[in-house]
Amino acid sequence: KDDMAKVAFTHQIQLTLAGQNFPLPHLLGTRDDNNSMLVWESSIYEMFEYIEGSGYDSSLDATFHAGKILGLYHKLLQDFRSDYQPPQGSYHGAQAIQQAIRNTISSLPIEKRPPTEELTETVGALESAYRTCAAAADKLGLQQWQAQIVHGDWHPGNMLFRGGHVVAVIDYDAARLQQRVIDFANGALQFSILGGGDDPTTWPDYIDRTRFKRFLRGYDSSNVISTAELQAVPYLMCEAMIAEAVLPIAATGSFGRLDGFGFLKMVRRKTDWILAHANTLVNVLED
Image 1 (cartoon, rainbow, N blue to C red):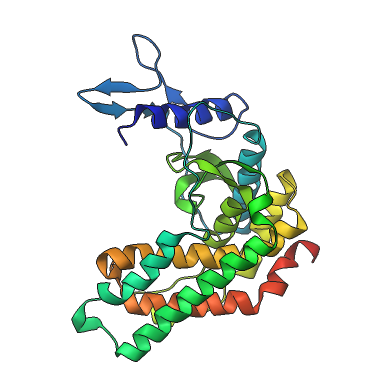
Image 2: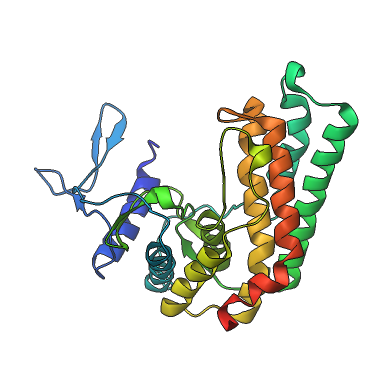
């Protein structure tokens, strides 16, 4: 976005990380004054070095290292300070998310809209689950935990891999001030969720528990997770999953090319499964 202060803030983060050998593509400075951004005709441009790598292959080694690198990211930025006031909003306990859940009812195309009772029951269940999960995480003390700079968008598409290791983390535009558990709970979801074909109603309810365990063990190997944080992870995963689904559906009536209502039903099933298996999930680091 064409916000010089925001760009300078994200560049400050990247330069801080680069100075501590964190895996990322280094910023290339302008020719005349070695500035990390070029402002030209009211637009801002930035250039990075090219990193050779490939996408996430779902291997356990790559999953473990993705968690480990996120833990390192948080550790290196634990005391990071800036004059810029970063955003603090997230998928957790947000009024905007609750409103988006309700808005999905009117956003679905009339020709694809299910019976009113079925639609309102599904949407009501998702809103109830979202509120319950937010309250459960807060009861564990989340609001009292230290906030720090987090990545804000930790998922497989924002990193490059080589030989089962992360060689570059990209996309720092979502960096913000939050409790770190909000970041690594979303990462645990992104690296363990299971999809399928074009019909989301056929997708499995369960997550890949082995990858879930490897991601969190990877994180814990570089930045120790507290018991209370681990207990909050299933609730935050549900919040993140609901938020990611309802925002585009409320805006467009669909999730990309996938049927909006079918996607909502799938998210409800997955949410129910995670909550039913929460105790098993929080014990993964003790296995």
